[in-house]
Length: 377
Image 1 (tube, rainbow, N blue to C red):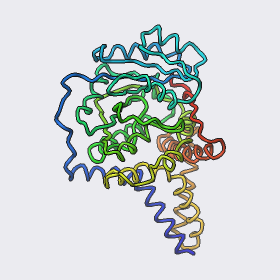
Image 2: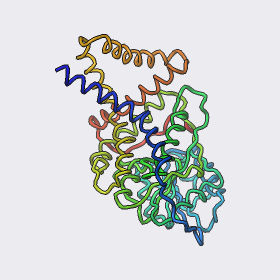
Image 3: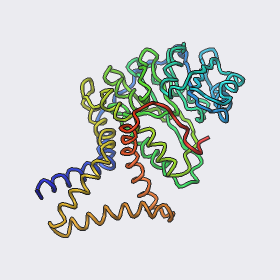
Image 4: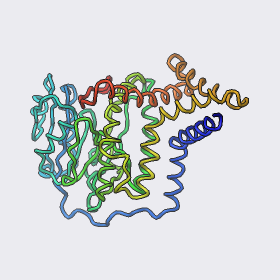
């Protein structure tokens, strides 16, 4: 019995450390030693026509500014179609988007973000489809930079860099996101990114996949396109800014909502199936995505195995104290603004959000309906 518990303890603990700390180090070594897959040196003879889609749900506070930001991009106006897809908004979102100059405003019944994007794509005319959140502000050259990699016909998806503003609260998402972007830049140089972001990304029109309402472009497009022989890249020079959720409680609620559809994506859409992946992309996906999503279970296994091993010496008593100390530090981080305590709190809440999202999925299903994150407008 103690042998089984020891194996569970050490394997689970090693996987937790690997996915969060070891994997980036392995990527760095691979980037340094492997020949990077280059882009086809082709450039656009004429810039492609782009349809920029902005899904919106009760965004009257920010939609006019978003439309103005999109129309001010350094991109030929005749080559840009701006579509605002209002998903059952009960405020003046549609009227303000039209008044601000959007080319097409869709007033849709409530169906969720992905359903709104699917409807918008049906009316899109561009060779490339770009997407942005209503509260994201793009740099003036962001669209030009975003479309550059698509001159290579093997590229199917490109995400840009999002920077979070207003980091005055206690949320550490901004710091985490900088770490995440560094990881994605290395992935992009190897097998391709394993996830994008909703603030700034684009996909070829002929590669667009109409997902179920519970789906996620950020998580689904990279692996779905990899199965179809298309590369997904990160373009850090295509920049956008977005206001950050000010509190960790708000960040927990946001991530919890995001995780509701995770089961459907990993199992239902086939992320778990290795068929169609290159070996390098399969390695990235397992290391960065699947092990991260298993973190709550791995932590539970470490704790249970540790309890079973308490009679096997002082070391296991020490590791149990370390685990309990992490939880205690996370709780203390709510009232004491010390950096180590805040980091512990952010890590525990982020990990817990995965389990909470799956719990919500089991209880209520995955409807795809969305809610705006508090404090981000």
